[in-house]
Length: 64
Image (cartoon, rainbow, N blue to C red):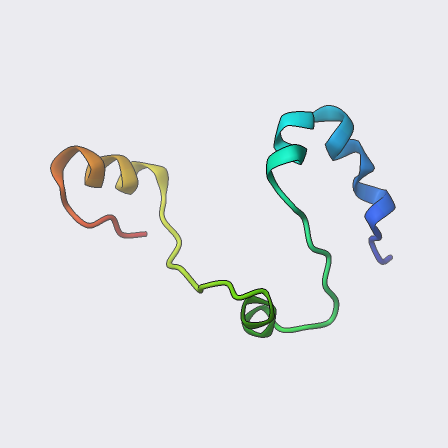
């Protein structure tokens, strides 16, 4: 089953503030690295919340 934009109309209704601030881009079948390149995005390392808070508090670099 393929998803279409219609499948995500609930997002704007349920979260109007987020819908105003964010954009969802549905892409198929393109590799994530090519999508980032086409959208001028950067491949960033994943962070978990605890590591990020620790880094903020103690000035250390957060790791995943």
